[in-house]
Amino acid sequence: MSRLLLLLTTTIFMSCASNAQYVLPTLNYGYADLEPYIDSTTMYIHYNNHHAAYTNNLNGALSKYQELFKKPIVEILQNIEELPEDIQTAVRNNGGGYYNHLLFWEFLTPASESKMTAKVEKALIKNFGSVDEFKEAFEKAAATRFGSGWAWLIQDESGNLKVTSTPNQDNPLMPYVDVKGKPVLALDVWEHAYYLKYQSKRADYTKAFWEVVNWKKVEEMMK
Ligand SMILES: [Fe+2]
Image (cartoon, rainbow, N blue to C red; front, side, top):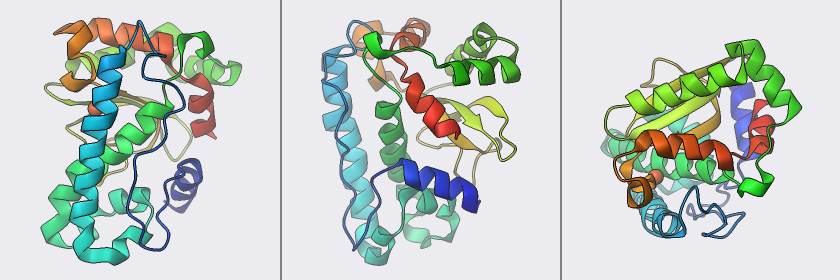
């Protein structure tokens, strides 16, 4: 777990030193920069309303136990069952929501900059047979996640890549999930992520996602 924790904590900048509360990250692009694949209104609401709410609610849950603000969010999520019982559900939902969106924004980039790196391509071919077979598995995970949740590409302790999905705001770091690993790519399949533009067509949203994936970030997370 220590290697995994180190990798993740060095990637995410939002460590909480000196009892600082968690804050919304700065986006690396404008709300309209993912158009036409992800529309600016959805981006604005998703970031300013949904992600902000998870962040505020996480801070609210942790405020009763201020010492927890000193811990990296990854460490908190990996050890939710060791938290005070009265905040476990709130941290599972809102800590998950906070961290999952933090990752999600970084896995996106304007289409002009979305180019698969050679290292990622090689890894996908090695693990799935081809890039198309990987995409097919990922799209299936997104499509078959009933209700709200996330599709993931994860890397296990042996370095193998796997596709999985989680309900609600759970993620592959949490103790509740069967398939654990380090997230290296994530897709939000909650309706709030796509309904304004795609309505009930989650599959169309998932296909559009490939146009705005930040493959450099995927490679960075694989290290
Ligand atoms: Fe979301």
